[in-house]
Image 1 (tube, rainbow, N blue to C red):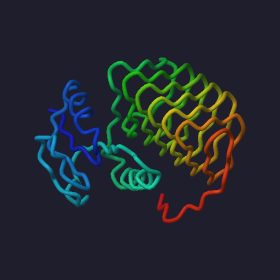
Image 2 (image 1 turned 135 degrees about the horizontal axis):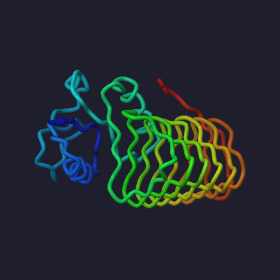
Image 3 (image 1 turned 90 degrees about the vertical axis):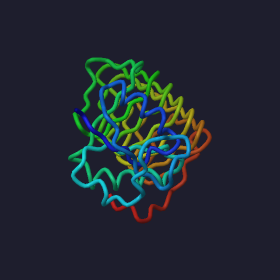
Length: 210
């Protein structure tokens, strides 16, 4: 029997539970910053020490860049016990490269083209399209409805907001935050915040701990 504990599932708890149960997992409970009133699962509190020695998967609604940093810290702490989760309905080329047990979460209605590389601890939300030969280096969250062209590189620890568009051949540096509906047609340096069309500003990163 495959047993699992959910960590930080937030408002997406019901979606994750349905998919995991359909794939044969028995969910022993969940850990989050607060109890979810819409779930009958056992609430295990928010003390991360409770889950040592158990199989688990970390996930979160990722409403902000700060939540991405928390998720990345959890991944570093428990990475040996984390499973990938790919929702039914995701269209993924057989030639893409992903690592087993590396906390890659891919929602339904996601399309990933040939020869893409998806790094560890990457969250890809629904209705997102990732082009051919694109490399997402890891520890990154991609929101709903993002369009990423072919031959794009996205550095470590990036947050990409809902509806953002990244054109083919663009390189995004590490520790970047891309706002919702941003349009990017040029390279973005490390530690940048991007909004609108190519409006790039330096971003101060504190307490990364990655």
